[in-house]
Length: 214
Image (cartoon, rainbow, N blue to C red; front, side, top):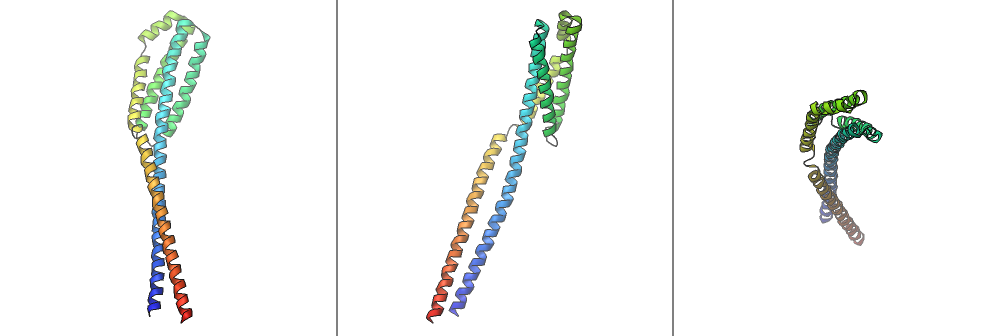
C-alpha cells in the first residue's frame, strides 16, 4: 500500500511539473508576441519621426539653396537645390508609406500639403529668376507665401514628434525589462521541471530497489 501511494505521488508530481512547464512556456510565448508587437509599433513611430525630420531638413535646405542661387546665380546652388527637392520627395514618400494607419496620419497629410505648397513657391521663384532676372525673383520672394507654408510644415513636424516621438525610448526600456523578466521566468520554470523530474526518478529508483530487496 505504501509503495502504491509513493508511486501515485511521484506520478502526480511529475504531471504537475509538466503542466507547470507547459503553462510557463505558453505564457512566455504570449508575452513574447506582445513584446514583439510593441517593439514593431515603437520602431514604426521612430521611423515616422525620422522621415518627417529628414523631409523637413531637405525642405529648409532647399529654401536656402534657392535663395543663394537667386542672389549669386551660381550653378552649384542650383544643383544643390535640385538635390534637396529629390531628397524631399523621397523622404515624403517614405513618410506617407510608414505613417499609414497611424495616429499621426492626418498630421502627415497636413505636412505634405504645406511642404508641397512651399516647393511650388520655390519653383516659381527659380522660374522667375531664369526667365525675368534677379529683381523679379527677389520681389516674388518678398511677396511670396512660401515662408508661411514652410512655417506650417515646421509646425506639423513638431506635432508629429509630439504624437509619435514622446515615448520611444521609454517603450524600448519597458520591452527590455519585460524580456529580461520573461527569460528569468522561463529559466525558473525549466529548473523547477528538471528538479521535479530528478526527484521523481530518484523516488522510482528507490521503489525498485525496495522491490528487489523484498
